[in-house]
Amino acid sequence: MFSFFAAYPTFLVFLGTVFGMVLTILFMPAFIRFLRRGHIGQQVRDDGPQTHLVKQGTPTMGGVIMLIAVALTILLVGLPDLETYLLLGAVVLTGVLGLIDDVSKVAHARSLGLTPAAKLVGQFVIAAIFVLCAVNLLGIPPTVEIPFIYTFDLGILTTTIPMGDGQLQIPWLYLLFCLILLVGMCNAVNLTDGLDGLAAGTVMIVMLVMAAIAYRENMLEPSIFAAAVAGTCVGFLWFNSHPADIFMGDTGSLALGMALGCLAVVTKTEFVVIIIGGLFVCEALSVIIQVWHFRRTGRRAFLMAPLHHHFEKKGWSETKVVVRFWIISGTFAICGFVLYFAESLVA
Image 1 (tube, rainbow, N blue to C red):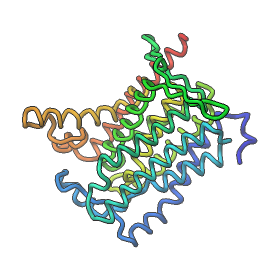
Image 2: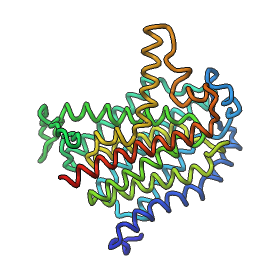
Image 3: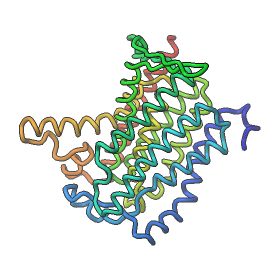
Image 4: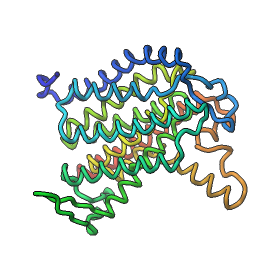
């Protein structure tokens, strides 16, 4: 639609952010009214902070509108190519998986949804398909670069399967690494989505950095994609700021995590994204440490996990935790971008 602005790629990226934000703000109120009429609301954990019990029944599955806004933005602003459709396909499929989980929670009036095994299997399948398509259709090299240190060739153990006139290459080590990265990011963002505005705000910060990285790599469509995701997070924050009118649910959080992991593969920042998304990594590690420490000693390492609940238990207000975690997320993102930028200058 805006192809006549092709000579101004910076403007298109900016437009992607604006469209994502505006479309989310336009569509969300009607969706919230629909959810309220249908009494479709969040099921709050009984063992969580007592201050969260008032959130019981708050409309959820706001990720549906976020995904619609991202898709429309990409179609309206950019000139979608195979790269874009693969990114969008992986994110939408993950969102559908999260939607099934959210619907299950609402239908059965419980906070558990799908079993952890079912969700993990779905995430691994989606991630595997994306990575194999990235390697075979987009020509993504099966390497992982640690800036200034070493580039690991994870394609040394590759199986080649003839398929008609072509062939399917399965770089097992790279596939394994990316599966851990993508599924890990999915669940890390999902764990971060525990306070009003926390996941949306931190993902917005991270996606703006990923848009900048894609743009510097002359990858306009992935840059527009990342900008669109950032924009939808801004629009969602209008309704998700404390006290939230709606939650994104697993529909949104799992999809956002997959978006971050997939962008890392496409832009070849598989290692740097661990720093850029450092807050998500810390949230996930806090859960792992909590479980490991409790099984070993019978005591908890944190007052509650994920990490944001630990600070709530220490007496911090929800808003204070969210704003400070935004600051921490921004610091991680800046450090990751500086590392990437410095290495690219040297290269």
